[in-house]
Image 1 (cartoon, rainbow, N blue to C red):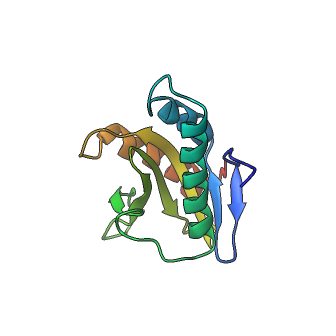
Image 2: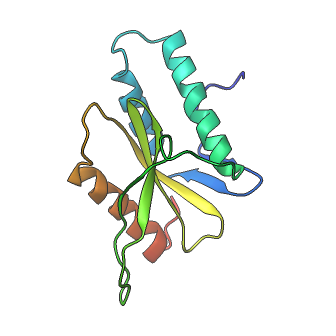
Image 3: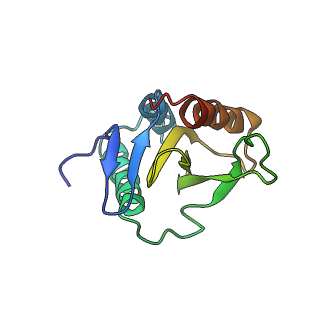
Length: 143
């Protein structure tokens, strides 16, 4: 694979996967925490792995619970009884938090990435996904 840089969006045979505003920058920040100071081939290999996961998601291929777990609740809409969930593209130690859009057919949005060397989902990550979800799903601002 020649292109080892994340793109703004991926169009697969089943889904479109779009990075929210700031998501690509958050990936670089998270990646820089992986073997801090040891860039080069390790980072290229890691990024290729993330790209392959995104492409599998875009093509509608089966994603394991290990590599694509449900992570937390999305905000509820008025009158909605049960909160929908967001998932994580998981390539240890980085997670990319994403959701399947209810507003845009067959589209996943990746909110942001985090370097995660801890177990629990942090409230700030749930909040950041929620902010992006509201902006896109309720306010119609796709980026």
